[in-house]
Amino acid sequence: MELFIQSIVSGILLGGLYAAIGVGLSLVFGIMGLTNIAHGCLMILSSFFIMFFVRQLGGSVILAFLVTIVIMSIIGGLLQGALINRVLSKGAEPALLVTFGVAIIVWNILELILGANYQRIPSPMIGVNVVSSRWVVISGEYLFNLLISVVVIVGLHIIIRKTLFGRSIRAAAGNVVAAELMGINTSRTYMYTMALAMATGSVGGLLVGQTFGFYSYSGMPYLIIAFGVVVIGGMGSIVGTFLGGVILGVSQLLGSYFFGPGVQTLVGYLTLLVLLTLRPHGLLGNMKRK
Image: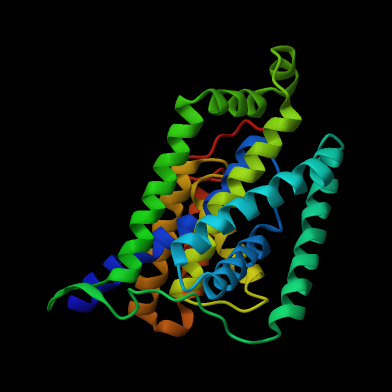
């Protein structure tokens, strides 16, 4: 019973990290209808930047993280403005291929810089347990991941629902022509949206880099996790992304409890298939797309 309870608690905590990984992908799809294949590789690029700046700035993770958010937001805006906006009106396939090309380029750049070496961002919470009892052990690192994920989800929800910028991106997501007739520059709105997605991706890069570490090729495995999270929760739903992360995390840890750690990933994605059979558009997904 203790192990069963621990599996559920650990799954929820892991789900918070998964939600942080997938929220940027969900945001871009919800606003632009774009599946960003480069999301995972750009997230790992942010992990690399944080690690690099930690070493250059005297070990300050917070300062390195803030610098990385600025850099990744600029990269996201430039990527959207210079490449994706030029092909977005031509259909989903050209934009998808552009993001795939960006993923390959980033992957190879990281391979040239890092090689096959394991990297990790330093964390003061490694090995620290905030709760340690007979029934459950809660890692400070994983609890931090969950709390940061909640802050990001709530922050994005407030931005989208309560701000002028949020109203503009919701208008662009609903009807591009009507938004432009109302004076909204949708191309600029898309640039800001991608910049915001890269900022949230930097949060995921920090948490992944501290919790698991990373390799130059880690972007694709984390892209698969992000897809699983946003598909379960509903593509484009920010709150659904958090729910999808928790469901995927709990299903994987319960799969490990019942069947062994070797099949926990398989159980997680079998859960995904079952949920998609019951809810093809995800738990909180919107059936209407541009």
